[in-house]
Image 1: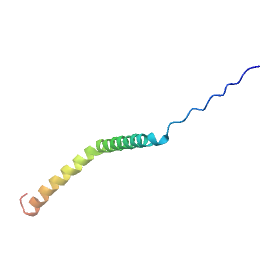
Image 2: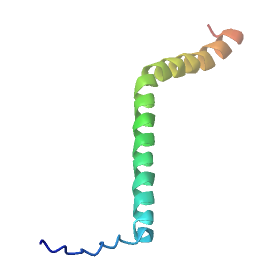
Image 3: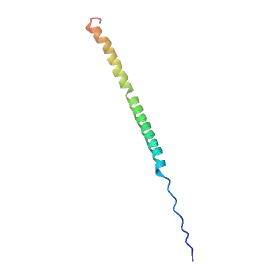
Image 4: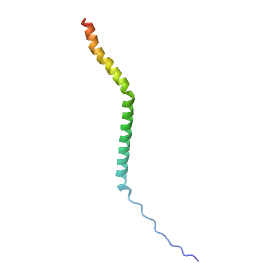
Length: 71
């Protein structure tokens, strides 16, 4: 007859030690994702922003000149 040997269950490590580390990893991952989204949005709209800014700047110079009779 085969003899059965009971193996003691291994103790799981305390979860309280891992929770702050997991929270920190999740927080840093969210920061990285937010930064990537922001960089993508800025890169996608920089041409439009430049054009609108240039038109606005020209308007701020040319409209007063036209109203004062300088043009």
